[in-house]
Image 1 (cartoon, rainbow, N blue to C red):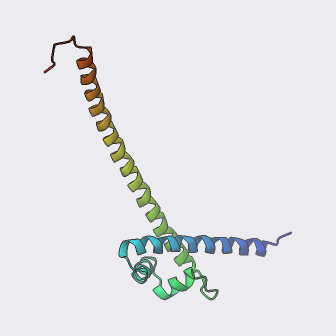
Image 2: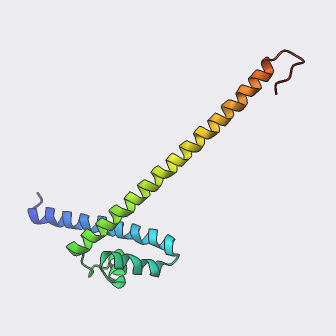
Image 3: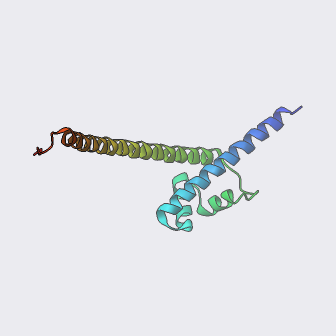
Amino acid sequence: MRTKADQEMTGAAQITALTRSAAHALIERETRTTGSRMAAYQVVAAMIGMSPSWLRKFIGRDPETKLSIPAALNIKQHYDRLCSRIEADAAANRARAMALKVQIDEAHQGAFGMVERVADAPPGTEEA
């Protein structure tokens, strides 16, 4: 049987692990944007109000690096914003793709309609 302290520790460990994963995702995204991992640490650390060295240690699973509540909340907030931007970009891409599909379908429908009219025309007549 687990004690309440064990359950709280498990919850704290889970929050730390999930927050670490979110911080890592922020770093990966910013690395692609800046082209530099060190620059990404600088940008993300500034966003969450921590130092780049703390962030490197936290992501690197340094057991001495503790996660504060403000740091955890800031990481979560910025990760939520990242997810919202990704979802908005995906929705915009889907809308553009569907609009293009509609245009292509309409163009094909018009072209196939013309081919059918020409095929149905009596021999020796031309459609202008």
